[in-house]
Length: 561
Image (cartoon, rainbow, N blue to C red; front, side):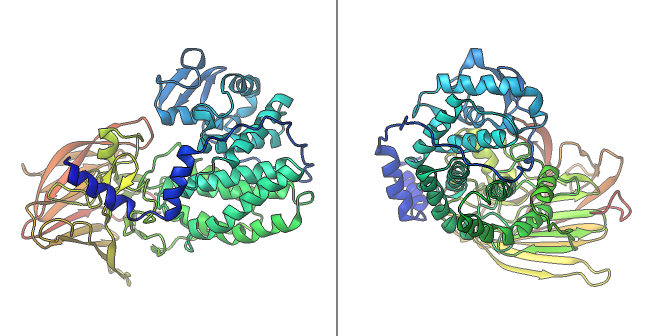
């Protein structure tokens, strides 16, 4: 990349940032706080029961053995820091999620020893474990573990206080988003778990942050503003954890504090729960939009059960044939045995698109309980070429123009010029008619010829038709449709203009290119971090600026959504 192009890319990235992200980064880089090793505050009396939290899968396979991101590691061989594992793996190592994972009680002896080992080998203020985000998650996990009936040793309580004091000096105001929310959640937990003037200060800081972040990060339709299904699930867990811990201390903590946070959060909880359900496939798990993978957040069923324990007035969720999440920019269509999740959203907040993919106007499709068309998913973070590929438009079920991405994703978490959707129009089905959704985006107008991508989805009980049109001047335009790895494909013509997609239960779907020319390519799907599954992608080249692809199935297939 030439110097001028690189400068332009940086400018088109930073021009969206807020001033606090500039001076916050400078402060974060050059500030040199010192750890405060003074005595820990006294513990606050707890007056109500702690509800069992949502559980993740266990990540400790032995007393000193972990499995994160589909990769194992032995503590005696790799330690707590160092180049033997990538940074995200190290972050997970320092989270201590296993303390509250499935069957955690059976590993209590391991957990006690692990906490003491962490304290011994992670000097205050040094290493990955003292970075604000993993520190915030660890503080919450240690406190949740203690509230669940385990006992933190005096050394652990002292370390916990030292960590919280360090966090107050390293708040991630330069990153904002879910990182800053995690910081505030940790300060709130610590400000309730401990008592006294110092704990009151932690709680006060948490409330100041939450007062700003809750109305911004939690959208009116219930979605999390970073527009990732995975991070939404994490946000729902965060909110439930906060409601849970407030209930534990509602008689001993300042009543106005508890009431204030409850007023902020409780009206949003049901909408958050409903948003998550709308964005799930009939198999019960999330669609993969933007940075999203299963296994990082608790499973949807775990969050549902946790919601019921924390919120007494939990009501049934009824999902209708057409669901529009207007503030987030997603549409769910349910017809017969099929469900389609449509992305008509912006890539994320303008100043915080770090978890965005160039996936505007992509979609996913299930028939019965089987996923048929899938976006790339996410198997890695960092700056690798694979990370770049997974964020790119070609890894999603949408249109690539002149080999470019619809939004300029680059680095590990950066976006320069980005696509904005416009012209959303929904014609709902009446009687046996199809539901039709139309939308366009301007992401390619930065290219010579100002191309604009228009897409129409038309769905009824037995079919889905996807019509793409690209206006303006360009050399090539291709619509890409990625099949789930479990789907067996067979073409009925040499050029793949028609064919069958066989589901694992023997159900057969038929695809037919009504305009355009198709070919099959190999691809990969990444439903979990550290995982790549071989798959196929149907690539449809637009002809006379348009393409049309029709999938058909029997209306009696499988279970309805």
